[in-house]
Structure formats: structure tokens, C-alpha cells
Image (cartoon, rainbow, N blue to C red; front, side, top):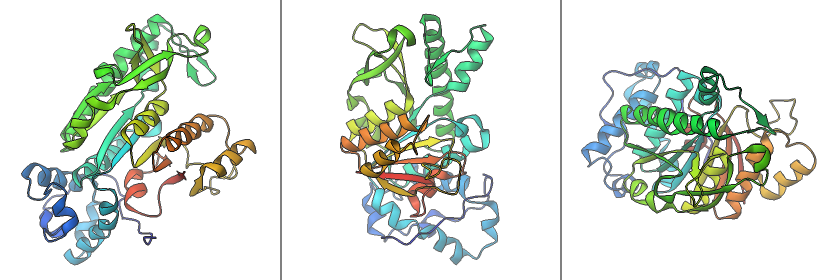
Length: 347
């Protein structure tokens, strides 16, 4: 078991001037890094890594001696070695999407993880944006058991907002941060094929996922591009459906044989006592989480997230984590430390 180490990335994101040469951080003599498509030997990858680190490292770290700075960063090496070359699917939403500061934190984390050799797939929803645009058009949002009731006019807005606005905005932010993002929806390349929900008479165009074809993603992630996927899909007749983003992320993780699925949420994770934020369950297996559900400890909006994780694990994903998206740099805490930033569920 790797010793728990938490990187000092809690300060607000600020660009750092005079950042030390990347060769000081990851020496070229380290085989694990050198083997990973020669990240430091590739000018784009080296520039990407430097840009990402500049956006993550706290400004006051420059007051530390150079040896201390290098030691802090080098402590991430065992975790980088563990996950380099592995696929990690991240579902993005909630508070991390609504707050500009948290959004910048998530983007910086994604770029850094990609630059050190992890294959990142980024799946997003966009509920608040959809509600905002529905309001502008005088359409009242309607929900049933936490799912958006989606008639034909609402589906049109969902597609325009998720695919045309939110998706391209996230792609632009990732590209600006130094990586290469490609925006897609479930419709592109038959990535996700939808079918009507069993409650379609009440929910309208809310769909389930009938099948996943990840072939359009493989060339992208093999070249360390970041696919950014809006949770909209179509059935075989071409009818578009609104897909739950957690579900989409879980099914994509399974189809890609991902090492890890991460759901960013507005809570600390799974709590032993729902009324006590300090009762966080750091790690649990499928059997344990099913017992917590049966006992009523997992309830409400956490149930579909847990079910999504359990389903992906049953299909071969190694671990699934529900982490606190309100915590700055929660992705780095989850992947680059043993401390984590929420609850990890294992098979």
C-alpha cells in the first residue's frame, strides 16, 4: 500500500511565473516516464505538462527551496506509474460545473493527468445551463424522480445547450490549458445508441443506453487527446434522447475497459450517517454498498450514482469513485494520493 501523501494544491489557481524546467521535476532517466511515449522528449507533451503544472501549483510554493518543490512533485511519481497508459473516465457536473473557480480546478487537473500519460475521457451533463435556457424561452423545467421530463421542445433545447454550448465551452477551456480536446456527443460515430426509458410515457425523450461502440474514441485516447462527451444519444431511427450523464459515463467506462470511473458530485461521498458529513466511507466493496443501500444508508440521489458504479464494476472497471466536486483539485487528490477525495468502490 502506498503511503498516503496529499499534495499541497489547495490554494486558488494562479498562473506561476518562472516555473522551473520540467526536466527538474521528472528527470529523463526515470524509465516509467521515458517509456510513456517519451513525454519529455515530445515538445508538445513537455509544453502541455509545463502549462498544466503552472495552472495547478499554488503561488506560494515558489517560496520553497527548489529541492522541496521537486520532492513534493516527485512524490506523485508512484501514482503516475500506477495509472500511466490507463483509461480514466470522469463524469463532470454539479457544483464543480457551476463555480468558475472549481471548473478551472477540474480542467487543470484533467490536463495535468493527461500530460503525464493517463488516457482521460470526460463526460458531462449541464442541468443548470439547460434550466437557464428553458427559462429564457418560457419553458418550465419539470422533473420526475430526479429525471428531467423531456418533451420534443425540451429535447431540442437539451441538444442545443449540451452539444452546442456546454460541450464546446469545455473543449475550449481544455485546449487553452494546454491539452487537445475533441468534443463529441453520444450520437457521433454511433458512440451511444439509445432506447426509450421504460417510463417514456411520463418522461418523454429520456433514454436508456442500448449499446456502446467506443471505436471512435480509441484513436483519440491512444494519442492522449481528451474526448469531451455530451450525454445525448439517438436510437436506431435517429430520434435524440436525453441520457443521464452518470449512466453514460459508467457504460463508456465499461466499454473502454477503464481502470477507473470517477463521478464528481455535490457531496463528500457515501456517508455512514447521511446527517454527519464526518462519517465518510473511504473505501467499500460491492457487497458492502449493497448492504448500505438495503439498510437505507444510501438513499435519494446517491442511489443511481451507486448503481451506476456497481454496474460498471460488474462489467470490468477496476474501481469506481464518488468524489466531492466542491473540493478544489479533488481529481488530483483522488488519483495522485492514497488519501482520496471521496468514496472508492471496488469489485
